[in-house]
Image (cartoon, rainbow, N blue to C red):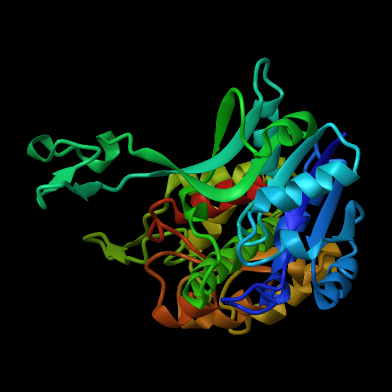
Length: 384
């Protein structure tokens, strides 16, 4: 049986930091959730010296989690984490243990899965998590002069050519119960390393660390939620000029109006239809060119000369029995703002008006008419 052990003590630099709210949840929740979702962990033990922490952890409702009390000697300021682990190993039966630090909330279940896959390789006794750092290190010699430690300053490498070095990030350590009790250490024998994302270098020791990590966690949560919303898209709607075109108005010598459309966007709309997603164009203009392009692309719906785009979206949702949260809309100017705010996934092109960008869930890397719509379509299809 594989178990996780998460120390969650009162703390000194940030009192009761393990249950202090981090991105909407108690700090300890994030690592406990990662362990709970790991395919290789059977049970999670959270060790604490605090009734307040115990009460919070028991209300996390993570099915693998059990709270246990640690003795005073193992949680003292001068105590090592190994002492708590050895005490735990002496009281509980299991095969392998992963020590997880609650102060590493950017840890994911995938990281732990990767760690156990390495641990299960023949001949492996321990695994630890690391990150790759690409900093040039120096040291001061006994003569008082500085010397480079990991590079030749006379042949300074480019960052992309510099292999860097590996640093423990303190997120997790895996070993066997037998090895832990024999060596009194969570690392021994033949050790493998599990490389994690560079962003996980930071641990929470001070309030300044808290602010850095919480911002990263918020960004991750936003990305996950966006992916969840994207996976539920059933209708894709877009403005025409400035999105499917570059926004330019071209005229021939005869006064004929011309527009430049991007063929990649057209292929994207076709792929959406082939995957059962309703497609449509909603534009404030009324041009025969738009109608002809829509017919060539075989889009399901086109509405021109529209003053109230939200009203049209509501009409289409009723027609196809689709909820607004299952609709994606792409715009570029202020008359698209309300539509972007109304749908489940509102997007705008890179050269959209600044006001529109404030409300968009996603801003493309490409400009309108240069494959921006296809960029969004590819993202949607990749998440279906």
